[in-house]
Length: 283
Image (cartoon, rainbow, N blue to C red; front, side, top):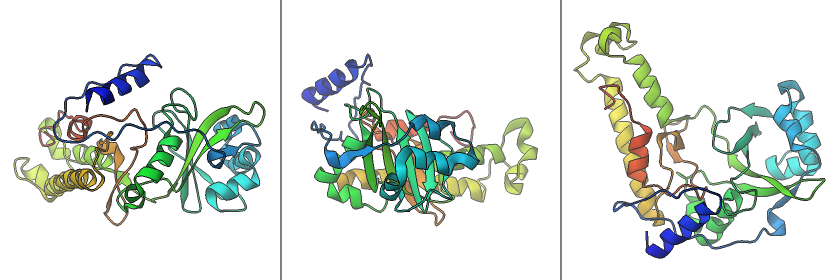
């Protein structure tokens, strides 16, 4: 990272009372400095109701709440459907996430970026910038890039209150972190070794069972995927943790969550830190 890029990053974080992470990395290249983008009319989605209705809605009332909030035109824009019937809420734990919904093979993520929707940490504006500057990134089959993205305008105040990003939904996918945790849970060591679900591990923890070999292979594939991403797109992912590497039902790997300007860390360091464990085989 050049001194000018470091200075711009520090200024951006400092504006919101944050401290930019210090990066001394020789193994991956920072993303280019983001150009300032204005919120164009094409990126604005007008809400027709209160967003909190969706946040507070019970599952049986979710379709009606989504319709009251986004309107039939909004549902058509987001999901390509005329109705919200069949929509369901997904588990949501990401930073600044408000909710995630799935309908008709599409996943909608609603967020409130730090500093406000459409601000300096806007994921929608970052997606628009990448769509213009890095078309190859948008079309990479191993990258989960949003199919659509909008900044939502409140129906009453006209203020920008949230952002929504629409992705292809990957059913039954799990992250590398999920697989890692499952391995540690089913391959305990020490006094709990005899409770392992793996017969080979129960017999001898020093012998690498098929699950241990598969996990090692998976981590190698993730490393190669990270290098592939950097070589093809000329930049680091920036948030290359195990939670952001997804495995679809066909066993293919996909990279997610690289749109936040918060994400500037070294890929190798971020991935290793995300899998820190006291489990001896994991180490």
